[in-house]
Figure 1 (tube, rainbow, N blue to C red):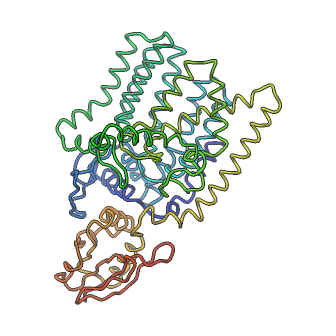
Figure 2: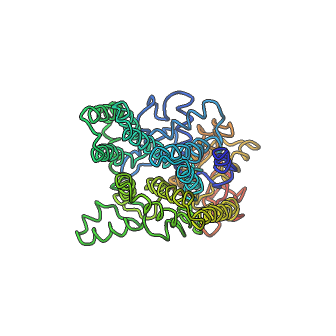
Length: 517
């Protein structure tokens, strides 16, 4: 019943909230559709271990770092869904929603059960993860940040089982799972080798690590990553793209490598600031991140009572130092990829926090629930009720106020409405060419998505991209064009006339449609 309730929470209204597709969602969707239909991405590569985001029919832009490559696991999940379901916003978001809200929740239950051997602790950890506002928000997007936790959780279960029964097959399974996890998310490249070393460390401290287990786990890891290694050897541009994803800062940020280039003292200060941001109580339990596509701004990564439960859980583990060490190490290293990237408060780059704080909180809930003291048991009930009450408030706001307030954070161009208006004008009046502004927030991926989902893919062959309005002066007759509206109504070029004003979700003008007769 709990998993059914979680599925309902994560799947309800996927086509409405978030209000718009992000550029990454659009890229994931169109490449997944191509893979589902042909087995190849839009560049014609057969089931590649990394997927280039380039589209030969898309906007002809050149990025400073070259082609962007993404790890494929999330796209293949979407592609599997599109094998049986049509391309819609719901169908491309559903795999991640089920992964984050059902599979990861079920996995953390079994991991907690294996680690704590207590069903109350397991249920508590699953309850905390399922009701995490950050997990809800990130899982309801067709992006790959939720793809890493299942591999981490799978390896943790193998480790827990190995500590009880040191069967080398469990070590092999752990190595294979971690190797497969490399394909999940860009931070996995840093994390999965670390988790393999952590497996060895904890098993060694427990006195159950043998050479055969080390060799088998390492062999399983290498076998899993071998296809990617061989592919990268013949595609050095892809390897360079992955490296530059860490060396290229987000707007307003500085990567660790850039900070080190600016001087040791400043680099250390910046690194510590970013690292601490992920343990800032305001971030974790009060406000969440600054980006509206990751937080409502009124709730933290976790619900407020989780702070109490996690502290109690950590204290309760004082009798099992090995388990405490495992979870503390996992917690403390979770922000490292985000620190390398130079981005504070970005929970999608530190998803390990969701795992380890949920496990600590589950242990804390069990410590209160099974206590012989009536006040402790009553506190556990009260905390559960407060969590349910706070989550209901978050979820109600998420589907109402947040939907409209965050719309421009997901797509500042509000392109869905523009696409619908363009498609309708072409349907009623026809157009020999459709002009879209170049570098308009990854317009080509979104245009491909909306034309494909509305069964108008033939429009792609008539689409052109222009750098500035002067390029429209040489456009053929019977053309449509989209012009962005930035504060004021754009002036139509000579020979063109405005035929429609596009408004966004909130009723604000976002662009205009012009026609050349």
